[in-house]
Length: 218
Ligand code: C5P
Image (cartoon, rainbow, N blue to C red; front, side):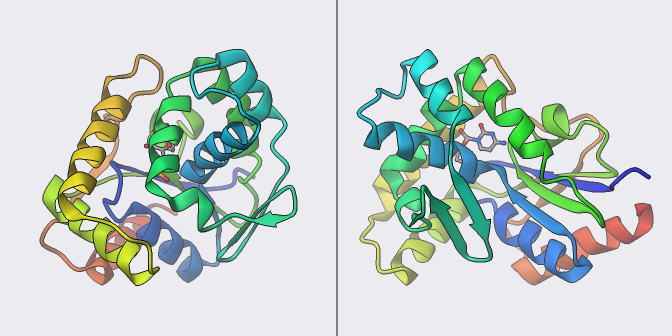
């Protein structure tokens, strides 16, 4: 029996992580935050003194990541790194290691291993186009860059992480451009993906919309 997958892609802070996690919880399915794997790779490289553009070295680090995911917790070699990987510097590092084809290849198997019964909700940039091409439901979640920067700003403030809105918006735009412009697995709406723009709708409404679509196909 094929394990059903819901693939949710979109730019940074579009709400896809929150929506994906809540849809997974409602359905009782597994959840994959694929961006965390790129963030973990960037963090592990930084700690090993490896430059983010040193492709063979970064790919070796990606292949050897010792990581354990639990709800609200991510352990890298036994150390809790949930906060460390959400820092803006690591956001940028993640998008830099993400342009390297051998890094993406190294993380592919790890991502597919999350696909276990009764189902999987996966969020990222290439869930629909590369990792889970036969997903039962594909969603492209987006929002204006202003709305996304404001959300990220509020998230960081809530966690007690210092931030300023304007630099955040610029950094986010830079990261989106890098994600859209790269030659391997660029961020783009898959031909079969349903578009959901969350600029003017609350997150609850977005979750309900995805659940409606999900119930129609699985
Ligand atoms: O989703 P999140 O913002 O945590 O992802 C961090 C970075 O990892 C993205 O900016 C992107 O460059 C990269 N990424 C990717 N493919 C994915 C998920 C994330 O290239 N499926």
